Amino acid sequence: MADGDQHADPAVNHQGDSQGGGRSLMEEEGAGDVPFREVVGSLMWIASQTRADISNAVRAVARHSHEPKKSHWKAAQKILNYLLETAHLTLKFKRDSSVDVGTLVYVDADFASKATDRRSVSGAMVFVAAMLVVWISRTQKCVSQSTSEAEYLAMGDGVKEALFVNGMLQFLRPSVKPRKIDVLEDNEGAIALAENPLSSSRSKHIDVRHHFLRNLTEEGVIEVTHVPSKEQHADILTKALPRDLFEVHRDFALGSRK
Image 1: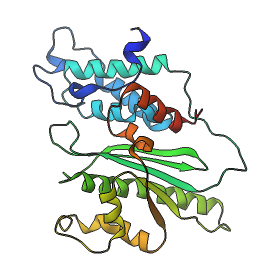
Image 2 (image 1 turned 180 degrees about the vertical axis):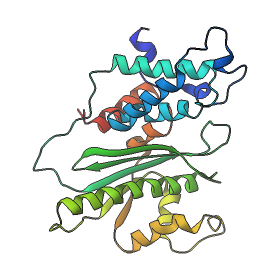
Image 3 (image 1 turned 120 degrees about the vertical axis):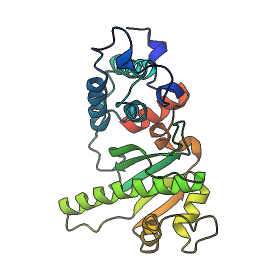
Image 4 (image 1 turned 45 degrees about the horizontal axis):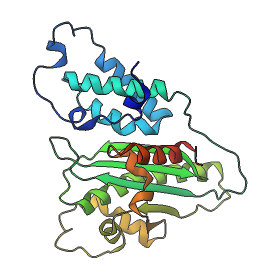
């Protein structure tokens, strides 16, 4: 295993999220038995179940399962090393009657990302009673034309997950009136899109299916609030971050807040 500082975070850098050059991994001499897809499949399971902190790195590597290069295999190995070195980290749930049982969702996007197709990345974390229950790191299906549009689409992805969680809470506690979902967004343009029922020349092209957020805002189902970028914990799900900032967001997500 490499030293701890080298794998202090699972970031895959630009090569891990790009097509890369040269021959595919399967064409490399002696690489025919490299279990790339098996490793990526295992990492995807871990990322979806307990380790939100590797979700973005795994998403980036998984994009190349059809024709991985040597750089992608190295990126997958880096994630494995990171997991081995941080095996003590767990997703924590605490029983605390003083905590407000409300639904809170952090949403973020990486506009145009580093991928060759220039599609943005959506990231969202859904918290109930201040504990993480759902998270996503997902490449958007269409190419956004601005940062605000990418953030707006990410907000839609996150709110859909939060609505599902709220539905589960209502099923478990039918006598309790569902609370308004608090959405935390760091892009003022995306907030304006969610709250303004009128379309400008810059937003007319956005497909109507994404504007359900406006209806939810008008009906009081969600409330979108601006949060400073340094407190946008969903950043960890959309892009590689400096180690210190990565650890702040990771500890917040996993419930290891100091």
